[in-house]
Structures are given as structure tokens and as C-alpha cells.
Image (spheres, one colour):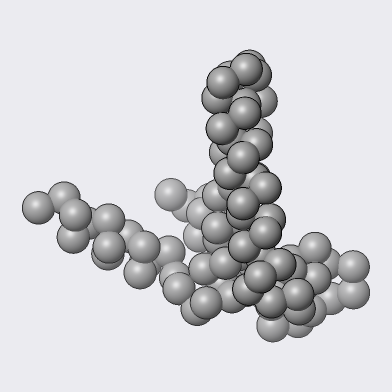
Length: 92
């Protein structure tokens, strides 16, 4: 998906440039544990939204979770292409 690549490129820019006030830069500076805590929080919010919220809220929470997973990927130098290759390998 093109938007995933666009968001990922912005994440990498923020990782490299670390502009003041950047949420991504704050997460990167906080390290893996800070990013993992956010993923854990967002995962719980997805589960809650799936159970009791509207479709619109569920989409919002899934987008938050995917965003934070992309931040982790950027932190760990895992690209969307790496992820695509892994998913393709499972289609056999």
C-alpha cells in the first residue's frame, strides 16, 4: 500500500532529523521499550474498539496501531519490503 510507504518514509526522516517537537523523534529517543509500551496500549485499544465501539472508531484505532508498528519497524531497521517478503513467503 502506497500510504504505508509514505508514512514509513516520514518516520525515517523524523528518526534521522529528530526535529524538535516530533512525536516520532520522541518515541525513537525513548528507545524500544517506549515504542513497545505504545504498541501494547494501541493493541488494547483495538481490542476494546472491536468489542464495543463503532466501525469508524475501530478503523481509527487500527490506524494508530499500524502507525506505532511502523515506528518500531523504523527503529529496528525493518522495511515495508521486508514485511512484504515475509508475508509473500507465507502464501505458498
